Every structure is written in structure tokens, then in C-alpha cells.
Length: 452
Ligand SMILES: Nc1ncnc2c1ncn2[C@@H]1O[C@H](COP(=O)(O)OP(=O)(O)OP(=O)(O)O)[C@@H](O)[C@H]1O
Image (cartoon, rainbow, N blue to C red):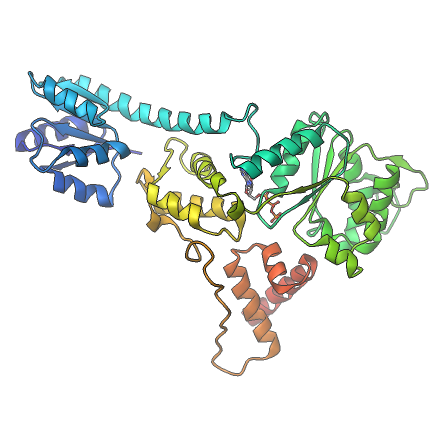
């Protein structure tokens, strides 16, 4: 991407000559004659550097200069005896100065060096904030609740205890499971993650426990299950609340005896795994309603990690924003920054979709901000106004009297949009399990294909 330079010079010839020189070196140049012109351009664009020619325009006062210098590197060109100007500029935050007349090579070299340094500095700033934890954790953040959580993870990782991770959708439960594995003596072994709600019920048992040849129609070969694949490592059961009842009983046996059998086998095998499970559902309530085995819950409850929602640890938002700005799928060369006002909005927002929603919003903002270095409030597509805006309520519109099935379909679509496709959040809003939601979505897909 071409670097963009904003040239401010009251001298028409200098504007033309310097623009030509910098263009020859591959820079895109916007030249303006005064402070107001520069300000206008800055409000719609984010150049990589300001080149300020001496004498300064009359409408460039110290405040304005300082404000620019906070956001962008400034290279000042000063007259032969302009040391006073140079010192004043440096005091106000300019990065460097060059004495006129400037050699084109020298000018291009200085511009390149300054722009590259800014990028390095920004990356450095990010790394120092992440490295503040002695060993870089997979979990970015520095709030007191997150630091407490990290301390708990470190303590439990060293043991063989079964861990149950609780928390709303998108808070980072899977990341927590990865962190437990990484910090555990089993770190060299595999981490096998099972999404309990995406496995069809009929396949669940054979996937988890494996099967012998001929155990059922189609079982042509012996197949080791996920428990065996996770040998000497960690088995992560995500969305454990979705495990069908018959498998709950078998899983309980694994937890109690550390033994299991492949389907179609009469021999017990040793489960050499550590089990970590996660859910965003209320397992206590489910157990009371008979939807989840009390004895299994008791076993899982031996060490519970509760991951707080993002709105209860807002200090994590700025480091997370910086992290997502630096680790996005777009060009790695540009590390954008969030402007102070954008960061304020991000910190004030309630994040119903937690860290996943934050990551999505930041990634979208990187795209929406185009070639600007800064992400501004207009690039943020926050779905509600900051801090506990009242709930949106629900309005479904039809141009005829809808059937119950039509209402169901429209409501599902509305919820999917509102929760940005997060199925666990949609299931929670509907008060149903994710498995049931999957069935509804399959019906929805089938009916829309039928009407196409
Ligand atoms: N502290 C964190 N630091 C860096 N990335 C994070 C952090 N917490 C969450 N994330 C990122 O946010 C996204 C959602 O996290 P994750 O999948 O772990 O959430 P979850 O609680 O398991 O969600 P669900 O309940 O929907 O399965 C992922 O991209 C994850 O990498």
C-alpha cells in the first residue's frame, strides 16, 4: 500500500517541488497551504506522516501542532538558521527535522525511517502490554477478574482435576480450555476439542468411545474414539449441556473409573485423558429439571472456572482491541489504532456477545476504515447504544395474517441477525437447547429452499 504524506507549505513552489520529489519515491502526496486546509484533510483521511515546511502557516498554533503530533509523525523542514523553529517543533511533538535545502535522497530516507519506526513502535506498545504477564497467556487482558482467573487456571492446570468452565457465549471458554492444557503437564500431548452440540446424537457414542469392526452396520473398520485420540492430553467437551442422556451415563463412568469401552467391545480400556468441559447453560437448573444427570454434574463440579462477561471486566477491552487490531486477517504491515473516542465507545458498550462480538466489530472496523490509520467511532457498528440500552423488543411485520410457522421462521431470522448468528445466544433467547435450535434451523433451511 502506498504511504500517504500530507505536505503543509505556504510556498507554492515548495509544494510543487516537494510533491514531485516524494512522488518519485513512490509516496502519495496531498499538499495544502495552511493549517485549516490540513485540518480539513485530516478529518477525512489519515495520512502516514505530515511534512511541515518552514515558515509555518499563520493558522498553525502550538495547540493544533500538538494535537497533530499526538496522532501522526511530523517531519519538519526548517530554514538554514531555523534552529529555533526546529526546537519548538520537537517540543510540540514533531518526530524529526531536516535543514533546508534538503537532498531528495535524504528526505525520502527520513520519511521512510519515520513511518517504519511508527509501525515498530505501535507493535512494541502492543507487545509490552501483552508481555506484562510473565509468560504470555493466550488470554489477553489485564483486569483484576481476568488476572484472578489466570491464577486459578495456573493452579488447576498443574493437577489432574476435571474442570468445568462456565460463562456466557463468546467470553472465551474455549480459550480458557486451551490455556489449561498449555499450562498443564499434558501440554506436549494432544488437545482434542469436541463440540457436543454439532455431533449428531447417533454418531456421538461411536465418535467419543470408538467402535470395533462390525459393531454396527457400516462399521467396516475398528476406529479409536476421541477419548483415545486425546491420550496423554486433554479432552475438551464444549457445550456439555447438550450431551444426550445415554451418553451422560457413559461419561459419568469415564469420570468415576477412568475406564470406557469401544462400541461392540467387551474389554475395558483406560481413559488416559484429562477432561475439561464447558457450557453456557445453567446445568444446576437442568439437573433440577431432570435434563442433566445430577451425579455427572457433581463430578464435573469438582473445579469450576467462571469466566466473567466482558461488561464486568471493561479494563480488558483496550488491550483486547489492540490485540485484535494487530492480529487481523488483513495486511499485517498496518497496525491501526483506535482513536480515543472510538475506544471510549467500545469500553462503554455492553457486549452481549462478549469477546467474540468485540473481535467481529474490530475486524469490521479495520475494513470500514479503509486506508486510514485510525479506527474512528463511525467505523464501529455497535448494535445498541452504549451501556445498558433498553432491550429492543420484537416487531415482526407481515403483509398478511401469518401462520404460526411463518411467525416462527421470521422470529428465528430476526434473532439470528440480532445475535450475529451466534446459535448459543439464539438458543438462550428462545429458552431451548442448541440441539433443538439446530433442528429448527434445518427446518428453516429446508422450507426456504422449497420456496425458492
Ligand atoms: N481473553 C481473550 N484474549 C484473546 N482472545 C479471546 C479472549 N477471549 C476470547 N477470545 C476470542 O474470542 C472468540 C470467542 O472465544 P471462545 O470461542 O473461546 O468463546 P466461548 O466462550 O467458547 O464461546 P461459545 O460459548 O459460543 O462456544 C475467539 O475468537 C477467541 O479466540
